[in-house]
Image (cartoon, rainbow, N blue to C red):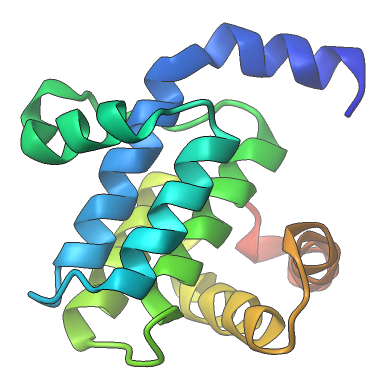
Length: 153
């Protein structure tokens, strides 16, 4: 990570990280079943974002206290969307409500509506094949480059 990326993450701060945790909690709970594998993934992502387990419990208890924020950094935006898709598929069952919510997040994050399902499928395929966020972002960047209309609004 270069200095401008670090500086941008510092500017976005915990507000964006807390918003991300709230989004992930919503994704995990939308199907009515927040199971252990989802909670383990949530804790792992929280740790990566500097959010303690106690803070995570507070966010889960009081989600209305957290304002939705879209990261301004393209890489962080993609990383959060990748995490949302990962949360949707981690239990090996994708419910219609999870798919709808994931698509809604894609729109909120600025991805072109007609290409969101392709984006979700590409991310899901990479996760299933054990590819990390960096490899997935390369694949998606190529996909978005091939289809200029799919770039963020």
